[in-house]
Amino acid sequence: MIDLSTNYLGINLRNPIIVASSGMTSSAEKIAECEKAGAGAVVIKSLFEEQINLETAEMMKSMDYTAHTDAFDYFTGTSKHQHIDEYVELIESAKSRVSIPVIGSVNCVSPGSWIEYAGRLEKAGIDALEVNVFIMPADAEQDSSSIEDRYIAILREIKRHVSVPVSLKIGPHFSGLANVIKRFENNGANGVVLFNRFYRPDVDIENMKIIPAKVYSVQQEISLSLQWIALLSGELDIHFAAATGIHDGKGVIKQLLAGARATQLCSTLYRNGISHIQRILVEVEEWMNRHNFRTIDEFRGKLSRENVRNPEIFERSQYIKALVGIS
Ligand SMILES: Cc1cc2nc3c(=O)[nH]c(=O)nc-3n(C[C@H](O)[C@H](O)[C@H](O)COP(=O)(O)O)c2cc1C
Image (cartoon, rainbow, N blue to C red; front, top):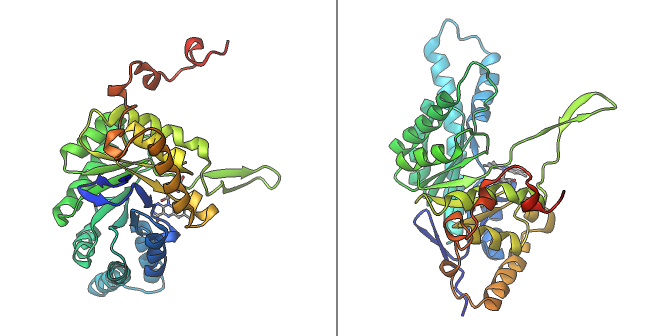
């Protein structure tokens, strides 16, 4: 009998498939569908700091509060409360309908005061909190350590307000990625999600306009997180969840072999429907049967840098003839 369960962030999941934060997890009904389709857990659509700030700013624009700063504070607070209230309702309603773990998600760009609301998400019943954080390193005046310090400040602030496990969902744009993840671990993060896939711009050359690039990932994008999870999972205690470019059972198996505790899926479920989870689970089970594995722990991390005979395959980044066989 195959056991697909996995421990992620100290929580037991019935299997390693997590429906990633997206429109697929934006209502209690959709979250219930994820559970029915076989998901091990869900991450709810993010509560966006920037969106809250933008909408509050829009509301403020139409009013003149220069003479009444108390009124300004009141309305700013009310708008934030409304967003948080709706999110809390979503969590409560999802938790009343499903028994799989429900992970909340907040998007942060600053260690601002609104983070104190994270405590309300915890009270509403989230099993863990994923912090979707991205600080665009595009300011030529800002050095990398000051940017990394902001990530740490956000993490510390969140940890002050919640006691549920916390993971950080980050992008790959760090010059000292291994060190920054170790700092996350040292500052209380339970997990890290490698990697988020951000909005990307493209260019329409006929109309000479900036347009959005493709929203969904392609399978080839899996290699970035695969490489980094294989490099770091054996060395650090923090739990790794893999994300981006995982489209089928093979992708899930690859990430588990690299050392991931769980895998987050989004694009493939948008394309193939939520029922695709069942096919993926069957594929993983069939592979485990063929290789005589009964549990995921028997093969997790088997191909991490620590466990392979030629770890340089993960460390090399240039095309060297001996490795790729092309002259
Ligand atoms: C339509 C859409 C909405 C998304 N919304 C969020 C979000 O609210 N919060 C978040 O952390 N990630 C969000 N993501 C990113 C996904 O959670 C996921 O990390 C990303 O799509 C990469 O995984 P994939 O290759 O399986 O698509 C969104 C992605 C898509 C396509």
